[in-house]
Image 1 (cartoon, one colour):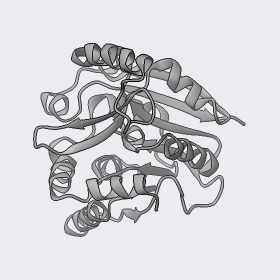
Image 2 (cartoon, one colour; image 1 turned 180 degrees about the horizontal axis):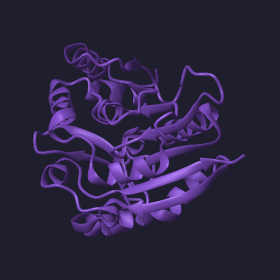
Image 3 (tube, one colour; image 1 turned 30 degrees about the horizontal axis):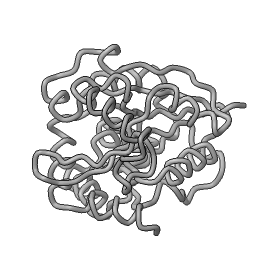
Image 4 (cartoon, one colour; image 1 turned 60 degrees about the vertical axis):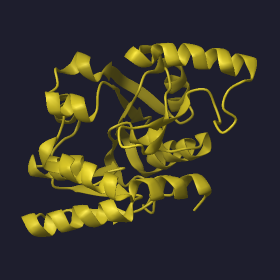
Length: 249
């Protein structure tokens, strides 16, 4: 396990994140935009891999909606343990796996759909690690299979827009934080004082990223253009962009 992946695991193993993502299973559930996208693109009989599933917010709630052939996978041992215990308490037969999205232990062409919700792929430090996730997703998808994920749009970041304008000048002048690898990387401090990594891409950068593998872009759309969200979801997540890409046949 490289240092960047180890950092990610240690961060999401913290009690704060166990509570946050554990509470979200029932208190947040599926966002309205997620429901629309998942119902549009995922068939009930599809074999689905839910990467970065955390405590099982998407996995469990998709299972409850009839998507029975689903596996939840997360790097955090503690979050996977929470999900497993939740299923025991609620008599749900869902497979949860502790694993690394950059090194998936599944055969080629194993899944109809892979999802990575709540900007999870972009929360992995290190460009090569995110590149490896994309490679692995492509490998385990069946021909014509779909990868559905979300990512912030750096060029449509609301109150953060001024921050990115200032960051761009720093990178152009070489005065950026030397701990950051590429423009768009950011370590954010949340309300509890916890420090989390997120890479903010723009649309053009994301298209280039996707085109590293033989994916066809089916659709990309901002979550708030798909549906109005509940106040609970807004507090939990905020706006993001849904990307739906298909493994080229």
